[in-house]
Image 1 (cartoon, rainbow, N blue to C red):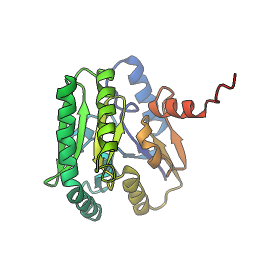
Image 2: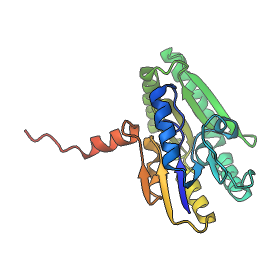
Image 3: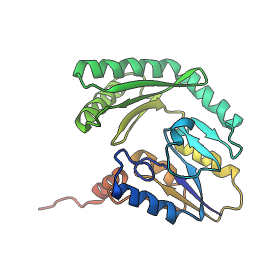
Length: 233
């Protein structure tokens, strides 16, 4: 059995639909037709319904905070671990939400700042721009990075930045941990493939036998830049 761990954003699900993105999404679905698809995403159960793919096995949702089993129910073992991490970081996430709102108001960035909760506890802070303005998102990411680096919460929280969102979440909730947990539940696997366009997914993709990423992805761009030789002239 071939298993593909897929982050749908910018691979199967695109912010701007068009003939080119449709072509790429359809082609990727065709390429992975023989694989069992496992989503690895910041989406929740409802958000996953918008992805044009059939996910009938395990699911890794909300950046690893939630693991859904093949029966469609939340895995209880992982739920207990995730909830413990949420409780430990509850105050830190709440403060991060306040800081993100302050950054938005101070810079007049016009961001959507959302405190995402799960099982009655704060889970993460998600920041996006309603019109996808990259400059505003970059300003918010820089300000929050400085806020974390200069404060006492850097050991409790981590910052993830994609072309569309900035996310602050507990360090103890890691998407690669959830993927590793799912790998331990599978049997009869002959090959694993990690599929993503995002730099923050490199850790879970490293757990797979192969990695597949779009040519214009954030992850490939940063990898290529890191590999460029220094100018010695």
